[in-house]
Image (tube, rainbow, N blue to C red; front, side, top):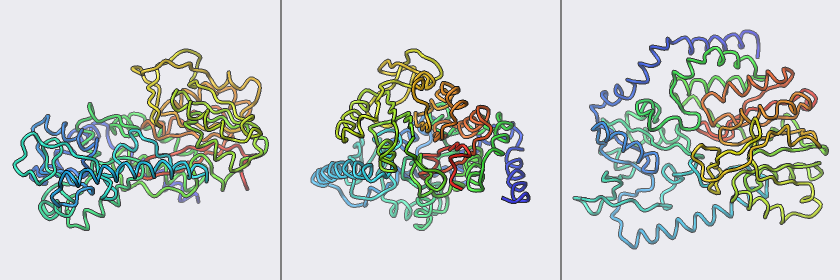
Length: 463
């Protein structure tokens, strides 16, 4: 990036962050009301999954009743019990095929992480008709031929657009892995919907019930940390990272989901264009899940030195160890699996386990797990590569790896999408540990998911 381009990038960021905090708070409080009033309080929710239902509850709590749900799963025809049985059979078959596909992808090294958790709670709402979950019937339904959810009609996008597209506000109540908001917005606009919005302003209005949600949170919290946001802006090593950083700041500040571009083609945690897995690699996999990332290491270089696979969820850990048991002895002997969490200090912590990718540390967790700093695990073998996808505990775990990072300069692949301020706090923290790291930011999924910060020492960069 030229000096002029860099200056323009920083000027745009400064312009974005110059909004007075009082104005930001006012925007949070009034944005959704303004949008709704502009459509004479006529509202359609696109997506009848979990998020759509939560939104409907919020709206009803203030006396707002939407006109309908719209959902790609609806074809608009009368549905019989036989239809529902066929849909259930198709759903189960789709789940079976998806599990087979995920295992095949992991064997091939693909890393489209699609476990069943909050991130994939509504896989069909913006996708294909034909894989349909049964809708809850209304208590009192004047039109039995019409599907309903929580007493609200569910229409096909075409029918919803024909009836309400010209005048109503269509809010896209879908946010899950694989869903791309600009594509859904284009779909609705193509059907004639004149007013299409994401849930951003609606989330701000009902922040006590809908936020924080991973990296989505109230904008004023970002503005309160504006100085840190600016400092982190200067750390990125290439144009792609700077553009991505600015786009994500825009999204967090303005709710502008259109600012987020498409994901890169490279697999999560491994930027092969920048570095390679070498024969001496000691790979510390924090959030090892069932071994999907470890499979990628093995595929990239079967001669790796060692993998330390850390997974706190008992059910996931059981699946991880079973997978290790399927490997050749010469490979399995170089993998150590640990059923612990990683953090800043030793202790026992509560953990919300469930056998999915969303398992995480939580004060109300259903199991108690041992927490160990990475520095305590690295007393015999120095880590050369640390990956973290641990549901918001990344910064704490990095603190527990401080000595290892400063002494050994491992490559770091750290997820920065679990909390709003991970976007700037994690790169800033890494920079305080080792100023000679080159930092990169890459999105590996759409709509803000799977955003990873890479810290690469100069001697590992492919030049």
